[in-house]
Length: 146
Ligand SMILES: [Fe+2]
Image (cartoon, rainbow, N blue to C red; front, side, top):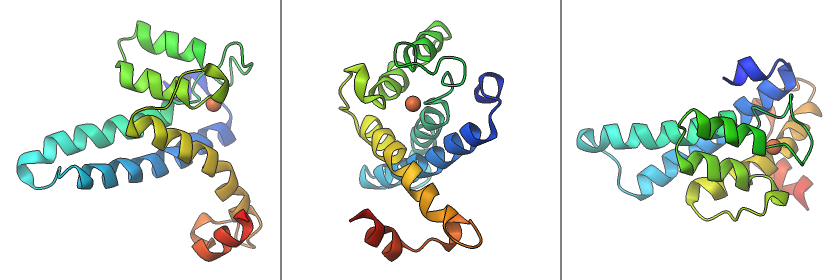
């Protein structure tokens, strides 16, 4: 669905970057909730998939509908039509400050935080000679934040 609606490589990369970070938040939250061990594996994997998918799709309508009047509302309407769960749709609405939708759940907050951070981390990577995120050190990110 992301690649059907989004042709831009940089928007696709943004989706993948946010996905990686939100997935890490989902894994940490699953640990915190005690979703560990074989008997909780299915629950854990469903939760992490929910986080990852929400992050991948948060901007899927942006290329076709970039104005604040349409994004992310058009996309969320399409997700609703296709039967995507309310938790996914609410988190996606909440990542746009102007939507007026509050960020309540851990997923809502994770998407919002990772989305905001994503552009900054990408900028930190682009000033490295390699332009690789793997060469960005946490200390230099913290220094640039200030
Ligand atoms: Fe967005």
